[in-house]
Length: 539
Image 1: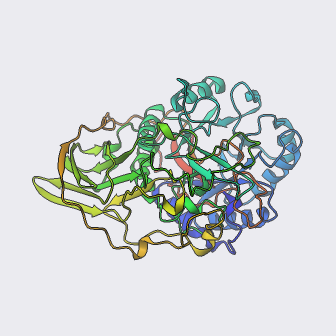
Image 2: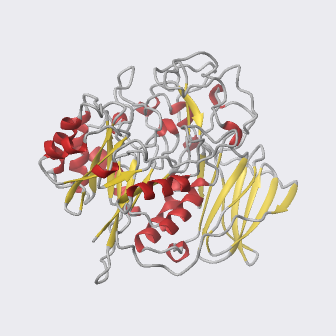
Image 3: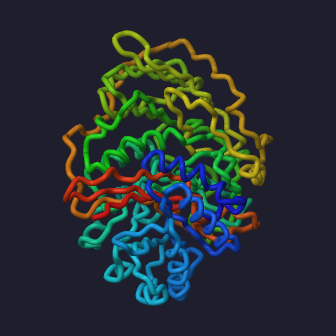
């Protein structure tokens, strides 16, 4: 999101995001923009960095700020201006542009105003936008919902797969940008003018959705998101330079880099047209995640949302976030293994073991209060082990309901990922409990592992498919990062109130360029856009 990176001073400030994304197979970044006064300056820096790092970028216009009924000429002019730069993503030789929302956009006027060939793939919605005008479309709803931008409830559930089917039917062969997202939790109260407080079900969504993607083989994939910290679905690093929209209260000490690691073999499999991720796993790694507290912990006395706030969007709820009941109080584990092994989890003194096959698999265990420890063994000998720096407690972190996920890996990263000082500037706003705006994990020592008081052998989830790889579809898939904010996205500009709903993410998703295509076969590349990730196949 460009709206939260106003503090970047040079193209070099984008380099780490570009290089990190490129290293894992992302080919481009989607730059989600509003109408902030610094937008053009940051776009210029992002395009320059992308060119310096052999990456591609494209603009995703946020129609929470742009007006789809009157800004078509403006959109076309912006597309022409930046489309001429070397780092611009092109599909079929056409300048690629996308959006967040914007169903009423006059695409004919956009094309005429641009004066260059465009590949227009906005976030139109079936039954609302005119898909006849488009080259493709983005579906940003990467989480199960009730069909009305909230978590499933009262027997109403629209799966992400159902969204895939609706878009594919509506597009009728045009390019489909499918969403992939790990989590969604936001908890803004009256301390900001963009109050909102709800979750979508996450749990094992990240693992399950990647397996769906390998089977679906969409034209494009968009990862939602790289740097939307306020909605907790970031996979980019905490230390990536950005300002604070107030989300640091639930983001501090909550790295998500393990989700980025988990995506690496899946991106490779997707780009190869394979449904078998196991052949792309080259070293043993265990990814785990969980919330810091059980959902029944009561924080009403000190939470920042226990009072009235602006609710013109219908997204504000007092207390625990809307939809919290659907979240499981579990520790989620995804082993990525080169050979079968036994994975163990010590959650607060209860030891669980799981016979994990080679490749990718998943399982979850009940969360226990206390230290969380993980290990991989083979033939009775320990291969890998780590103790998480984040215990599970029954205390409210900084006095609030925090439904963000803590993500770790075995082995652990060599350095601890932490927010920069500027990314903590609004940390204390609205807090009712004393809490220092300081990262603590880097100075923390791994807590002592509790001696097991009980043991259990756990049946894991179904392993990822291991069928032989298939060739790419005639229309090669493209992976893109998609705007992830169903309601107007918040911005992290320095101004008291955001001026863009979904700031374009700083290019922080890496994109891998496709291997040279075999004769007669298409090649794929992955593109990331701001808070989006895209993969594209070239004929």
